[in-house]
Image (cartoon, rainbow, N blue to C red; front, side, top):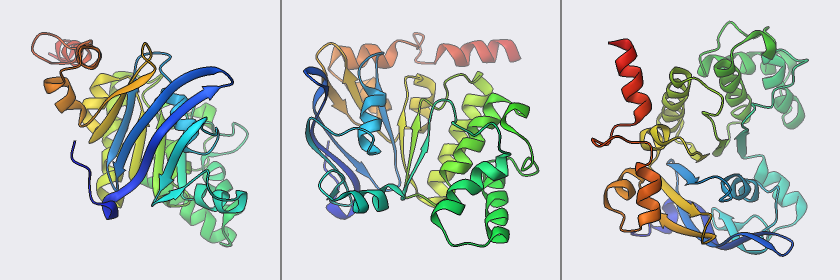
Length: 270
């Protein structure tokens, strides 16, 4: 894969080894992520996808290697500088992580109150705007328990976007969602990329989502504990010579290359 010019690179992962004590999760991970692309971290269960994301957002320190944003190693700077860097990240965890005792507007307002000097009126208006961006205009005063799982994911995304992050992270965004809600979330991710130019990093094993939204990807192999491929997931599916990569990317497809979930949905709607 041709390396993009340095000015186009938002994130670099260099010879990263992830470990808990003597137990190695994954070794020698290498990747480049361009500005404004959707980058997929994929692989089978137990390969370290979410662990890699936790390293990238500063929750876990690498056993070896570097993670650079705009050429700056997140683990090569002091704590205050790292905290400032992390303010430019937005994260949507699997369970949305909304505060159940707060309304949706209050959830979105929380990081704005914590990290900005905006007035209460400005924060309220901005929270309303962020909810509108994810299709939840009019739901400002609802509590998380009063809305569906798909709406909770979108509300979590609105909060992740509260501080206008340069990089958005998603950990298994389609987890727990029905197929229609999952595809709606995929469309929303693409709209954010296209309208805001945000760099988006997604942990996923959902093949339909991977092929729909992924511009670039890496495949982590739990057997060898190494990264086996980087590239556009559709190109890897069609042209990879690595059997483990090809098997993973075709495991949910019929003979024509159509995801089984899409076939089922089309059959039910016909």
